[in-house]
Amino acid sequence: MPTISQKGIAMPESPIRKLVPYAEKAYKQGKTVYHLNIGQPDIKTPEIAMDAVKVHMLDVLAYTKSDGSEGYRNKIADYYAKHDIHVNANNIIVTTGGSEALAFAFGSTMDVDDEVIIPEPFYANYNGFSVAAGVKVVPVISKIEDNFALPPIEEFEKLITPKTKAILICNPGNPTGYLYTKEEIQKLAKIVKKHDLFLIADEVYREFAYDGLQHYSVMQEPDLEEHAIMVDSVSKRYSMCGARIGCIVSKNKEVMATAMKFAQARLSPPTFAQIASEAALQTPQSYFDNVIEEYVSRRNTLIDGLKEIDGVRVANPKGAFYCIAELPVENAEDFAKWLLESFEYEGATIMVAPAAGFYSSPNTGMNQIRIAYVLNEDSLKKSVEILKEALKVYNA
Ligand SMILES: Cc1ncc(COP(=O)(O)O)c(C=O)c1O
Image (tube, helix red, strand yellow):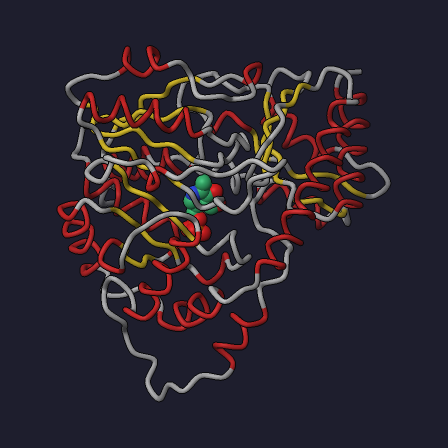
């Protein structure tokens, strides 16, 4: 038989999806499964976006330009201006989700064997994108006891080698919920300028900043034009995960010209989804105000509940809709499988993502899980109750 690639063998499974067969078994056993494993919000997509594709004037569902429709890119620039990010349509390439923007960012800035420094735990698919690009992830460890704040600058500097090409951050963070302060972004800006690196910021959760805190983008930082690359997406902002629309944004002309070649190779981002995404930009602020209020209540319910469980430690998320919880178990993946296969409480169980897959350091986060608070408050209360009862039985 012909052999598959070493790269393919090295590709990691997603910790978010790999327990799906266990969940399927749980359904077959007739259990209700509360899905805390995946960042698929239950929030309604703005009607204006849905209506735009119901009532359209197209005769042919054609390709758009490789960097996306110009009308849409101009409107994205207007949206950014409202967030004090001043870019024009030429600084934006529309992509098939933030995922493709990440792939373009890796492809445009790093070669095989280059290194990217990422504060961990990090969005698990960064491992997959790195393997696909042949790039080595060098983790800098942020700790649950520090609420996952940015590690000290010296920790970054210790890790920089001649092969380091970029620092990648997720702000607000998935899976930590950490929101970087302006001072932290400024510290990173200083390092990338000193060592001539790219600063890639995944800002797909920009709107989800809580407790009156303001998100500060790498694109707002002055004198970072050549270094800053922003990754964005409509998936979470408008609860439009299935649209598969995102963008890569940079003022670095060479980066954009290079990303454009990758964009041309895949021809065009999806046309219908760009129409929906362009319409979504008219979503009123009241939609976000309600969504944020909802997520803050969910977060408070979840975190308060988790803190009451013996032996559970949890950081306080200030943004996005995830948290990392440390459990009184040795191996959270075994526990997560057991929850689906062998446990039920009042006919239900929970599916969580084992957090080890959000680290690249071996044997780290083994007793942690990631929880997405994308379910309504009653379901979250029920889920916390299930976790509490499950830990009692598991540790008996
Ligand atoms: C941090 C982060 N970046 C990027 C993505 C990719 O999202 P999409 O491709 O749907 O835009 C996700 C999805 O969950 C994410 O959590």
